[in-house]
Image 1 (cartoon, helix red, strand yellow):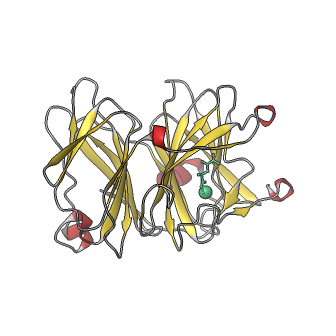
Image 2 (cartoon, protein in one colour):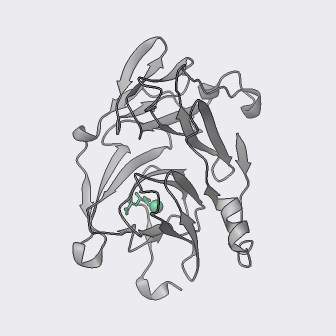
Length: 276
Ligand SMILES: O=C(O)C(=O)C[C@H](O)C(=O)CO
Ligand SMILES: [Zn+2]
């Protein structure tokens, strides 16, 4: 597991492109046969990919977290963005096709991730945050979620926001997680943009062609910088940072947040005239 420490906006003022990418971009997430996780000290979120091939994978974290097993004091969100697979939770196997999600509560001990076909592996995007209470494990399928449809094709930001881990769907301590699909022809996500001083967030961009790039904007609203992001890479967004992007072609992304509350709309919207 790779560790990323926290920054103040002043720290990044004079960062080179390379430094900014090293601190805020995660380039390698889905590696066949591996668990690849990043621990950000922003609200202690652990996120990354579990990509099983010919044998099941488990997330083994104990001494790193000072506990006896991974979810002793944490909750976990999972969304499969790859081929068909399954999750075995305390002996019960649940099929997980692309777009299927799972909320897995604190104190769940045995967890295995499997792929049906090693040549088309499942890609489990996993996000875990500290938890104080054990809530039930819930399987989440995209067709049961009523999306928030927002934006407009005239402003190139028409999109559907599927809130997977949200009070409408399941309980959680502080994790919120969802999947945003842009309408073909739209290119901007999260525009107009926002910050949320009370929560951090990560964005995983995927379903992109080899040559597609997303220009992901970050930083204080009046001092923005960008990361150029390829398929299946993720950005860390501290609470003080905007997070918005524009793609050179179609893309999808998964967002995940944690912090003081689980109120999705608790955002500080940034007026366009304040962006610099
Ligand atoms: O397209 C969007 O807008 C989003 O998906 C926004 C994220 O959900 C977000 O940033 C929530 O704080
Ligand atoms: Zn946000």
